[in-house]
Structure formats: structure tokens, C-alpha cells
Image (cartoon, rainbow, N blue to C red; front, side, top):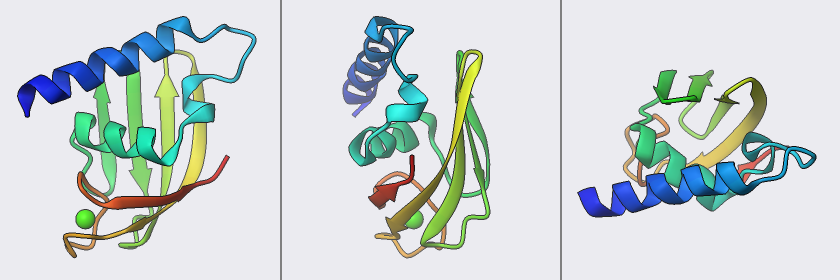
Length: 104
Ligand SMILES: [Ca+2]
């Protein structure tokens, strides 16, 4: 598990480093799967601020199926409405929940 998290973190950082600056930032192009990995890597658990290095994720208005999520990477940031299936039925967005959609 720890090795998987480390690999995912390196993959995430590598993705952020290779993206040309003329393209939308990682935060703006994040996929449902990428978002799901981000939730696990940062230990997101409902409303709050989570971060590692230059990557900061803020979760607000978590209803148990929808949350407003702001992803800040360095000086760029984007805000998304995330819908998810609360697979562990704990009422909050966290690792293991299925991301259904991430608004652009
Ligand atoms: Ca959950």
C-alpha cells in the first residue's frame, strides 16, 4: 500500500512537471480517476484543506454525494463540482469513494 502511494505520488508529480505551460494546468484537466487518486494520496476526508508540497486541495459543501473542490497547484487553481458514490456510506468524500463526475 505504501509503495503504491509513493508510486502514485511520483506519477502525479511527473504528470505535473511534463505538462507544457500553454496547456491547462493539471488541476484544470483532472479526470475522475486522477481525482480519485488525489483523494487517497492527500487523505481527503470531507470538508477541509489537504495538501502536500505545492498541491493543495480544499473541500467545501460536502453533502455525501456532491462536493465543491478547489485544487491549487503552485500559483494556478481551479474549482470543480465533484459528484461521487459514497461507497463506505460515511457521508463524506474520502479514499475509496467512486468519483462519478468532475466539472470543468
Ligand atoms: Ca465516503
